[in-house]
Length: 424
Image (tube, rainbow, N blue to C red; front, side, top):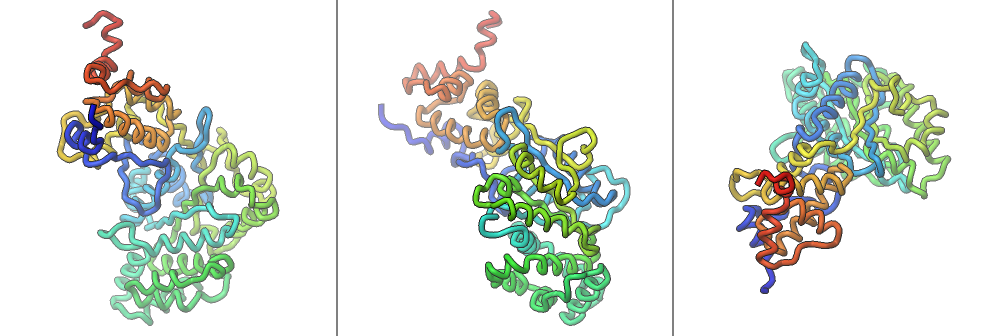
């Protein structure tokens, strides 16, 4: 039998221009990827209500986004949720997020930045802060502007003129007003921000690795001052991959203690205490290693407990087939060549349930397994992917590529219950 062109089969049989699923369970920052809030609607709403509105209304300084599964801690969608909420906040400076969180009246504008702790062997918290400032200076897509650009526009509106000197002076005045204790702001940042355009991004791109390591706090100072000058008094730092601080073997105990101590320092400074809100990802392995360092620095508790529910949101994976179907649907829709009545084609519901089971309900793992399965089914030119084929494939017993077997694999899979019950 001649070899099947998998891409041609995807196009003709399934109306897909490509395999839409990611090869790795990794979410890239600023990369446009399909997303459906319906997959984890309860957890997403809890994130807004507890970690965002709770910080604005109740002054909560630190929150935690946990993942917790039966056999694993990663791949549950923490990075995706953080990035999506960051984008949502910055799209209208928090108006939509706070409204969805249940706020009944107009709330103060807020901003958010995403960063991560994935290179602590060569860096530390200060480069994380620097990367957060880079995020504030970066437009999320070609059709929008950065948070700093929005802040500058608000300052111009308040001043009634677009004058660089006046803008710079307003930023410096704001730093004094909010109690800045770290010395004067870096003049090159203030001047670049005041000048507008791409000058601030260029100034940040020119900062050396050494300066990022040593002076990250100064860049955060500038960010808080620029936002305060624009009337934006709350900055949320979404800090991902805290597990690297715990699981990276090159990070010594003294370094862990120092970096966590720096988190404590931020909470004790007047200029950060009420304006800066940090949300960390967490899981059991990280908790076991970091517990004593957290306690030594008297940081707010991170454990999942009845007494700490206001500061914790937990992702436990895809519990229902409907959730897995919705996750697959948005990725399939993104690659569909034309509208199709069966928006899960080529997956039958039995296949989706098997995918959910073998991935332990972890979205990232499910998507990478779906990619693998889709390729395997295309190689055999299957019209649909049944639960039977999926189960056998992941057991290492994929169906043969005979035409009769292909038809059986498509027709038999999700109708097996009907056959057994005698309803067909």
